[in-house]
Amino acid sequence: MGGAATALRGDAWTDGNPAVAGTRSGRSLAFFASQSFGLSELRYSAFQYIEPTTIGAFSLGASSFGFSDFRRTDASVGYGRGFAFGAMRKAYFGMLLSYRSVTIAGYGAQGAVDFSLGGMVELASGLDLGFSATNVSAADLGNGGELPRSLAVGLAFRPSEPLLVSADAYQEIGYPLSARVGIELLPVDVLYVRAGAVSQPAGLTFGAGVRLGLVAVDISAQRHEVLGWSPAGGLSMLW
Image 1 (cartoon, rainbow, N blue to C red):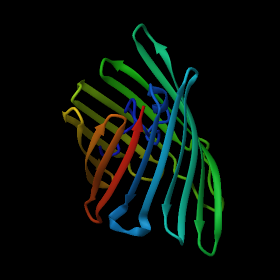
Image 2: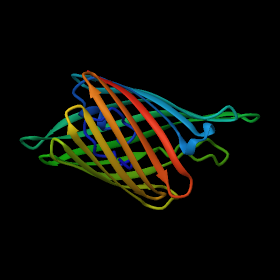
Image 3: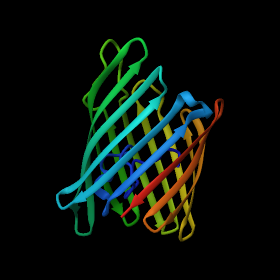
């Protein structure tokens, strides 16, 4: 969906917004893998678990990117919770604490801890507003090794059960503002079809998913205007 995930309530991933954990009513365990532009050196894999409790939802995740000569590894713990907002609506707040490590062959490894925040609120029935800020602690790896810092604001609109539309404005510090939009359709009860677009860097995304009972399987691909296709796939268990 073009990466427009800042206001996706009930998602199994908190990368787009740490507050998402607080919107889940049940547990989730999700796995994801991608290979950018078909290059084995650009493989990415990740998992995340979310455990809702009576005092809020807790998340645990890890990811790895790269190959033997260069590897970035992240591990995170998070918390999200919903609060009453008006008579019928809720607001959600979340935080994520991450340890990020970079290993370069022949040079060793360096790591740092960063802190991210997110929030979400229901503006009207079927319409959610979300925001997130990553690395608000401005952590870095030392010796000029900066960790990414970003801000995002997004809307998600579900006018009916078969249709979801989302849009984000995403700004990573030091890079141009990126507009992201996505759409998801549910043509039959078990099948999801998705598409999206990104402005910076310009690209298109396409995907589909099948959910059978507690298990969901997703495939997707992103098209970069110069570098080509990046395939990806995911497996989720929701209960």
